Image: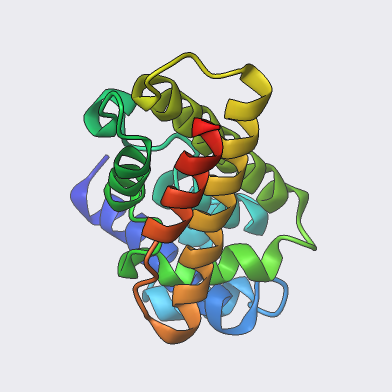
Length: 187
């Protein structure tokens, strides 16, 4: 692909991300995306034959469903709370670069099954990773249901905090949640 073509595709995605976050997917015409990207409307359809393809590509490329971390990078045997804190810090789900895409995700989740599907894949992947971290960090083997419940709880807290940062930009402290979950597994 020629550099100018790949740049045009990137500009389309950048413009769409901004416009979808501001006004919503359904309220954003493709002509407006093309205009913001500075490209002819036909070029937009060359890259994305349907408007929904833009939305699904944004999530696939800019919010991958597979976490970019391995359990071994953050887990320390005997330190469940610390391992969960390191996991949250390593994933940094609330990082500034994804604020617009998180806004699009939350805005469109109820109206587009593709968005719901992507969030489900992301959540399931995060739960599997968190379970692996718990297995690697726990001083003794954990019962499967208990490990799964703890992972779901921590992932829910991480996603809530990432979404909360959209509104106030604060850096929530996940350490208390990590300590509570670690303590519940020590019983």
